[in-house]
View 1 (cartoon, rainbow, N blue to C red):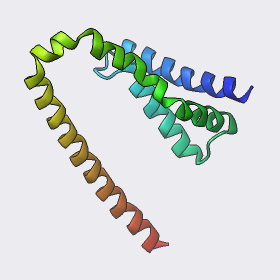
View 2 (view 1 turned 30 degrees about the horizontal axis):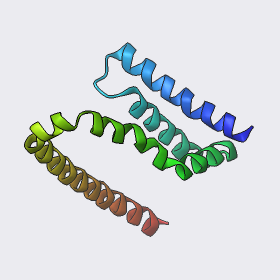
View 3 (view 1 turned 180 degrees about the vertical axis):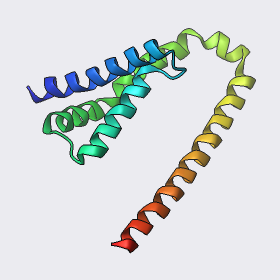
View 4 (view 1 turned 180 degrees about the horizontal axis):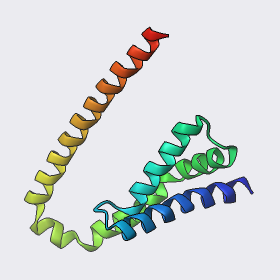
Length: 121
């Protein structure tokens, strides 16, 4: 029953994200907005329900299954990937570098803010 409650919570946040992005015509995917809203909710409540904890652990245990559709997509479009490998490679390298840089910047800011809070207490 915990798993069902947890997956319902996750799907509700995804639905809220989808509806919000469609109504407001936002340029981000609904699941990303839903995940952000879930993160903010967890951050405000400062705890994770046991149902959500159980569900997330179960999903993480089976995470490799979620890569099967991507692998099938690569196999189906192998000829297109071979024809356009240069722009794909450039996009992958640039997006990886941007992600690493952005993550490092966010971690540096978070570290600075947290160290200020710890020193104030």
